Image (cartoon, rainbow, N blue to C red; front, side, top):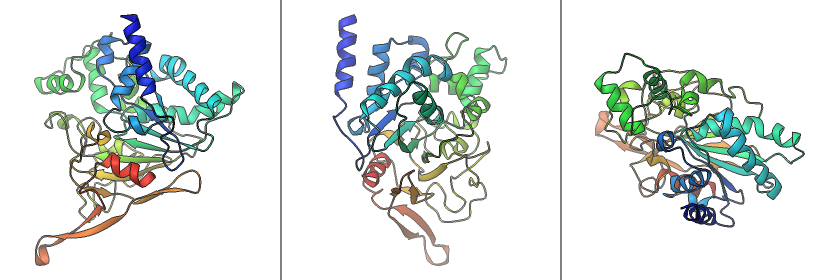
Amino acid sequence: MKLLKIAAATLALLSLPLSAALNGHPVVLVHGFQPANLADRPTASDVTSNGADYWAGFWLSRADARIDWPSQERITGKIATDYIWPKLQQLSRAGTCANGCIFVSHSTGDLVTRYIIDNQALWLQNAGLQPLSIIASFDFAGAGGGVELADLAVNVAGGSSWTDAALRAALSLWLGQMPSPSNIGVLNDLRVNTARQLASFPTSRVPRLRFAGAGSDFLNATGPFLPGTDDGVVASHSSCGASVVGSFDSCSANVAFDGKLASQSRGVKGFMPYHYPMLMGNDYSHSGLIENSRDGEVTAANARANYLNAEALQFQTYQQKRGWWVFATNYLLVTGSDRHSMSSLVSQAAD
C-alpha cells in the first residue's frame, strides 16, 4: 500500500509540465478546502495526489508548481510549517519565480495565498533565500473574506442547539457529513471574522484579481445561509473581495452578474487592499469556475487590471442589446464567453 501511495504521488508530480508559463510567467496553484480531508486525514502522499486531482479539470496541465495542503489542519499551524514553508524554499532555490510567478487559487486557496503573499518575503530572507517574485494572483471563488457556512459548521460542532433540517441538509451537502469537534480543521480559519483578520492589511502590493460566480452545485440549498448573491459556498462579499461583509449582488456598481448594464444598488463599492474584481458568471458555481466546462456567458466588473510589473490582464468585451423598443436593455459580455469556459478565458487572456 505504501509503495502504491508513493507511486501515485510521483505520477501526480510528473503530471506537471516542465514549463506551462502564462506569457513567460510560471503558474503556481493553491487549491481550496477539501471536505473529505476532515474525516479521512490524508497522509503527505495523499495530500499531493489530492492536490493534483483537485485541478485536473483545467489548470493542472497549465501549471508549473502547486502548493498542496490538508484541510484538517490550520493555516498558521501545520499548513504553514509542514506544507507551505517547504514548498516556498523549493521554489526559491529552483528560481521558479525569477521572471515573476502568477498564483492561481480557488476557494480557501485565496486565504492561504494571502497568508503566503504577506509572509513569504520575510520568511525566505530570514532563511538566506531569495523571496519569490509574485506579480499577480488569479483568485477563483475566493473565500478570503470568510464563509458563513464555516461559522455555522463550527457552531454545530460546538453543540449549538440551532440545527434545523434545512441547515443540516445544507451542511451535509457542502461537507458530506455533519461536523464534530474532532474534524473542524481549516473551517476555523474560514469563519468570517477569523478569515478577514488573517493578513488583512498586507504589506505586499501583489494584485489579487477576482473571478466570481453566482450558480450553485447544491440546488440553492445553501443559499438561504449566505448573504446576497453566492456561488453555492461563498457569498459575493468574499468572492468579489469586498472590504466589508454585506449582502452584495454584484462585484460592480454598474453591471450585474448576468451582464446587464444598470446601476447596482447592492454592488460592491469598496474592496480589500489590492483586490480587483474581473469576471463574473451568473451560471458558474463554486466548483465550476475552475473547470473546463462553459456555464453561460461571462461579464466583466473590470476588463483590465495591472500586474505588479508593467504587464496587465485584459479582456475584450462588447455590448449586446436585448429586448424590444423602449424595453431593450444593454448587456456587457466578454468576447469568447459564448464558446469558452471562464478558466479558459482567463488563461487565453493571460497568455
